[in-house]
Image (tube, rainbow over all chains, first blue to last red; front, side):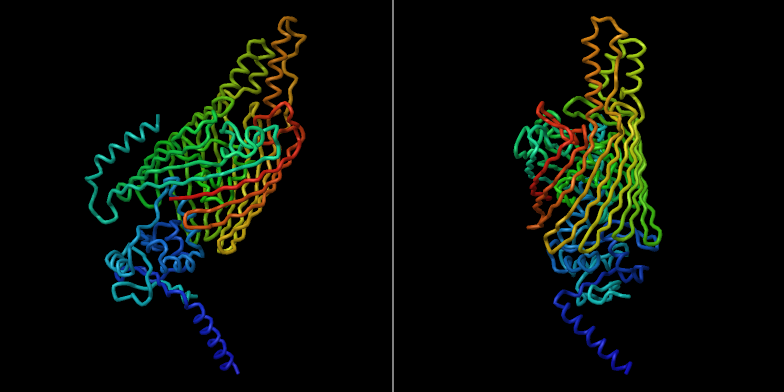
Length: 147
Length: 410
């Protein structure tokens, strides 16, 4: 009885994930050389919203963005920070126009993000899951949030 | 003066910047960014002006039935980054000034030195961090409303501070706490004179945890207002009683304080902000208590919001002034004029509550459109936050506002 219930539940979960899989599966990544093994969704959000400037272990964290309007970027901020592109624009307007900071540097493509993340343990970025290779470590996926 | 200093330092840094290391994060970059608002306000009270900020010359109601001059402005900013530790910012804002003209003003001009990612010191013209949205109160796109609630934000209309501030951020668990200390001065023109804030200092603490944040501030300054000084210098000519009145009410060099507390919660679909502030001036300006609570709900690109805001002032709205019988009859006319001036100043303390309903529509990238309707009730004997009151104005009434605005950022 319990086994069949869990089968039904997993089928339901699968169906739910399928229906939301119209979006890209975007993953947050750091360099394979980075000491950072895992980050929670809110820790990643804090780095990309410039609320913290370091990884929890204390090393400097440098976020790297994808271009405005890209599918990866919209998906990433929707899932990680719960914010639309317009809300992100408003968020950065608050920081920019007091001279407190500037939004993350942008890389043009998944490949460029992967390259710059792979080369520098301080950098944290996000790319399509299918673009992941051995140079980077996946911390978080927008399709299956951990825990 | 600190402005010019900042510009000189800016040029020196620009000239010497080629020596910085050629790491990919340590390039010299210049960024030009801009924001602005095109606004239109209508007030049902045609015997006074609604102005939003006490620093502008005229507004909606008496001067214009529909005023574009309350919320419209253009801000342009140049940011230079010299590697990860040093940056400089210059922001010029063009908006209606105290004389009613659109003369560009230097909003910020400062250099930031950031020895570590969590510690920074700024020099030059910087923000006066009295409120939650002080840093971006002029950036319409960054705030949910057409303008920050007038009741609270009129308590400290000054936005800038010429001096320095230091900011230190500590993270513990999911909490992040930023402590900021500021010191400086400001000269501010308003329609009835010039205010000078001297030896201003303050402490601010912002605590954030995920979508929630809390803001605490304490600010202290020595304020003097030239027109008020002139009035009480005249009182001082009238012997011990005149001097006593001047000592009680003048603004010269007395320490004024402001305490502010704010909380904000902003999750995916909705937000709620509440903020409270109290100023104590020990002068004719008096004391203020103001607060607001606001909330909004996001439905795709449309965000309706509701705000209640209120301001109360200390009850000292009149004073007997000089006793005519103590002076020669020839001075009676002058005494009456001085007493009238004193009582006019005391009576201008705002008591007002406003409920406003509005909506923000993010209709295209980098633009929003806002529509806001408000109903204000003015306290008995008060003119609320209205200015330019005309002979036909009746205190203690109520008025309605309709505001529309397009905000943009680039």
